[in-house]
Image (cartoon, rainbow, N blue to C red; front, side):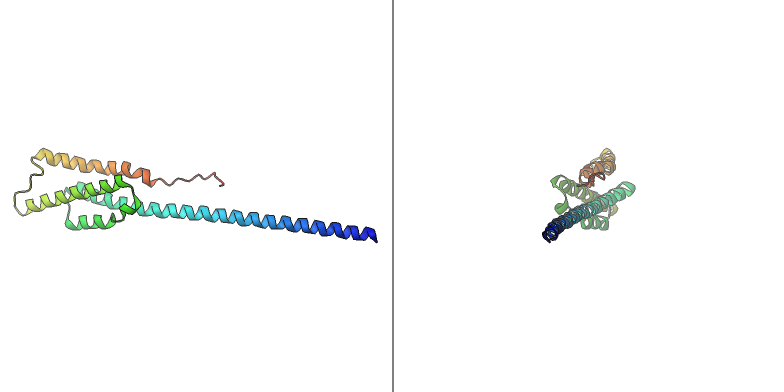
Length: 165
């Protein structure tokens, strides 16, 4: 009889141990799921940030392509550009914000100059001679490449596929 009680006590201890191990396994699974949710949410945030930044880059690229192709810009083109790049100050550092403003300012100068030429008025002293027009067009063409370089550090979506954690 004493032997049976000892077996029952050993079984109770084993049950307690396995129950505790089961809880540890469940806690480990819950921790793993929490880590995976954290990583998923972090990656989703990175992707959303990338998409917003890329839409601003596309707005810049659209304006530059229109200027380079036509060497003209309309009021509507400038308005679209400003709408598309409006959120840049919340998504980029000062270097891009200043760059976008400079492109906007140069586009506005070009718009003003071309409007005055179309109306038959004497344009402002920009450009002073045809060489300035060539320089401006070259600068604007270069901005298509330069903008890619300027934006590249903000457009990287770093992820390590092999990383578990």
